[in-house]
Length: 218
Figure 1 (spheres, rainbow, N blue to C red):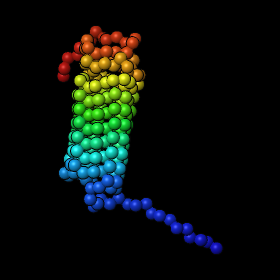
Figure 2: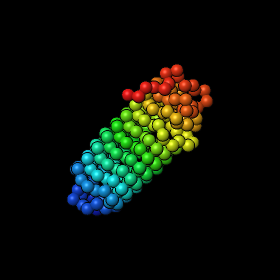
Figure 3: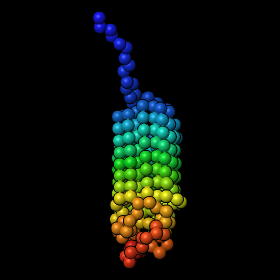
Figure 4: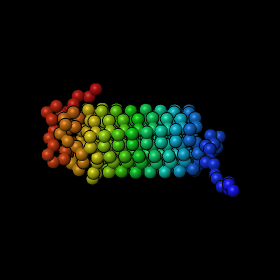
């Protein structure tokens, strides 16, 4: 005799739900909205479209934004600690002054994104495209850029203490003037030879500044 077993359907996203912690807006279109100041801690934004949306000063702690579209979105002053931004499309997105400790931006498209003043301690940018991204005054201690595209990215004036991972990162014309990279891991001479430093750049033991330094500005 067959017995029917009870089962639970997965909760579908509610795109009309009000902003709230743990809200499920996965696959929702939330373009060009004013959402600043809301608490989205633990929320689900997987595959959502937040292009041109104002997310300033929001709480996105532990939120899941994997594969979200964030083109020209603003996150200035937001709390992004331990959030998942993996594989997002965030061309020209603004992450100024965010707190993103332990946040993953792995494999994200972050061309021309702005991280000025951000707290990025132990953040992961592994395999991310950060071409022409800026990190002025950002705290990068413990962050990793392994296999990332840092071509023409600007890391000058960033704060670095302790380790910083650059294994196999592409560093064509990456601005590293004045940085203390003496504790950086994964750097090799071929990366330094195509990057842009100056007399104040400190390199790990065994690496030397190329004669092409300092590079001209674009």
